[in-house]
Image (cartoon, rainbow, N blue to C red; front, side, top):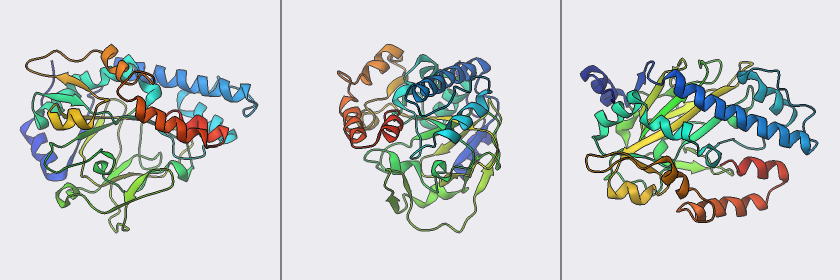
Length: 303
């Protein structure tokens, strides 16, 4: 059963545009996502060794250090986002975690859709390319319209995060200023057009916690100056209404009074590169990847 927000939590969210949810992601859910991430890291490492880019697999290192050792030898060529490689039951089930779904229903109502923007984010130490500057998530939503219901982001750390390891920082109350001017860089990453004087409020979190925020809240990731990888995953909730069904074809129905949730198999079918509704999006990425060198191509094909 989903767990609703309290009156005080709802008031804090409406005032600030964000809310820290403590201990709402179960150990089982976190461990399943971590296991998936471990598999992906291992696949990357084996491909790099096979291609002669990486000297060894670094299998002896723990989860929060192995990717850093790999990237020390084979640096990322661009900001890294994992999406298509995360179509997996472990990720699908995150939208059904009672504390997350209950929070979304408290704000959006009972008809809930999983929005198709979701990201696994490995942030290795001391790589400024992986730092995302001030932005609103509305920048990244297709045909964002103020008339639509809001999109809620749940940012979920898989390791402890603080200002040293690159936690998020937010500007409380910034959701009340509407969509702000943006620019897009050479990698397609959007950010606030004008410099922001506000330093933001860092939001340290523990595994099991989640940061819930409105799609208009200004936020950024701090630099990871630790010696550990900052592992996180973010998912989004929207109302399951006609506007969001049209704008998020790669999402799925999570809860409804009249229909059951769409299954994992139904969601995965939407991301099938040959027959799924997201196939044109994936083909565009693949065509772009063909224009890049082999290292960049590998990173883009995780998008």
